[in-house]
Length: 27
Image (cartoon, rainbow, N blue to C red; front, side):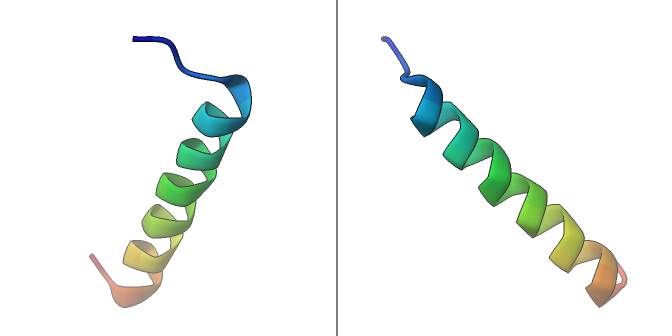
């Protein structure tokens, strides 16, 4: 499988946002 840079960065930003949301929720 081959991942494009933009797709990889999009996933990274998505998980980064999920992590921030989890911290704000107290997880």
